[in-house]
Amino acid sequence: MAAEVPLLPRPRGKKPRRILRRPVPREQQKPMYQPSAGPKSQKDKRPLGKPSIVLRLWRWMLRISAVVALQECRLGEGRLPRRGYTLLLPRGGSPGGEAALLIRNGTRFSEIDLKTDLHAATATISLEKTLTVCSLYLLPNFRVSKPSLAELIEQLPKPFLVLGDFNAHSPAWGDSRRDGRWRMLEEFIAENDFIILYSGEQTFIHSAYHSTSAIDLAVASPSIAAAITFLYFNVVLKF
Image (cartoon, rainbow, N blue to C red; front, side):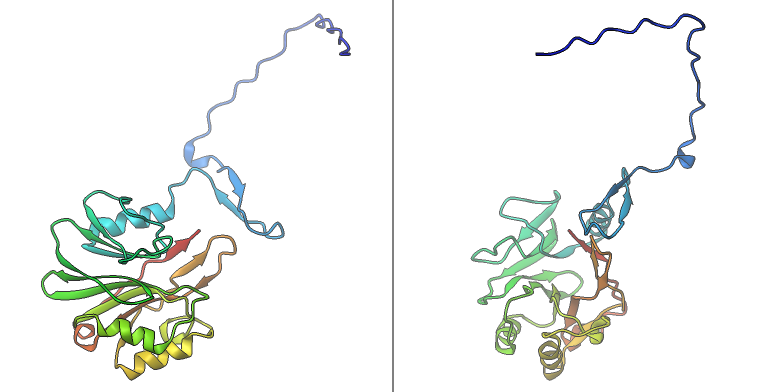
């Protein structure tokens, strides 16, 4: 049974004073914050309402690029992130769309059907010169061997450029530590006289812990590596 609460009479006297405040200029306003989904012990505060850094980098890359290599993109058939591009996925399907190529419409290309267990999307691109571009993703817990990499490389017409998330740490491509896969990759690259291209920047930022590492690589055949004078890796944020 609900009890009725008596209404208190309004006190007599002066009317309540209304306080008027001047609007604060936008540049002086304090941003609102929200905690991240990370551990409770870590105080991570990020401003709300700001444009996404990932979205800004994404738009910038698409505005200047004829070909974009994507990994962990979560794209399926018919899911184009932007109009004006052709989406290439690995033949036979790749769970989650781990590797993909975006090629600007009007760019001449020929897709290459690879026979490999690795997640890779590849095409021969005709720009000023003909170049084979391969987008490769190596799962963190997937066992990768030299023969499997050699089988992939043998199917790439030269000159080629392999852009990928190798999930491997090594000072050879700018990371401060090593993991279990680094030795195999370094030996494979050295044995085949491939060239590692990197700018020395960290390519991965953990969204919760804000830790950085370099797990993304660009590997080129010697003939095309000599023609590349500058390569800049954008920072990749994964959520």
